Image (cartoon, rainbow, N blue to C red):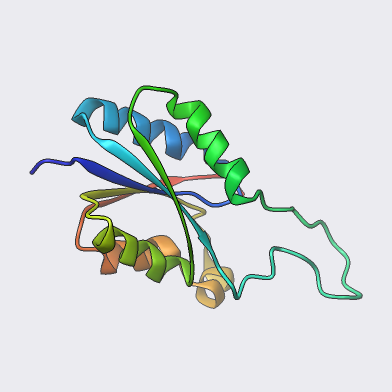
Length: 142
């Protein structure tokens, strides 16, 4: 099997560096191109606390900042295309695999457990089960 186009879904939360580094290395070894995908979830509140709640809120980075971080790690080693779509992250990633003729997916996972995983689900699990291509997940810190 030839892998010519690797999908790299990237979000504005957590540390994407290990995921980008892995995808870059894979693309170089396979002489493939990378498609960096940022999904805007219209149902996501952006990590903001509800009125009256306290706690630490991490402001997610926007698509431009995420894409610049990816481009800095990839430099000119491999061709890099950038795409932003709106929708449910898991479904949008699977649709992009199909619509953009991707052969492989490299994505981060937070490895959430217990109630948090039950409530929020796992985008990586959904993609791994629904995508018709191989999916490699890399653990990232929140």
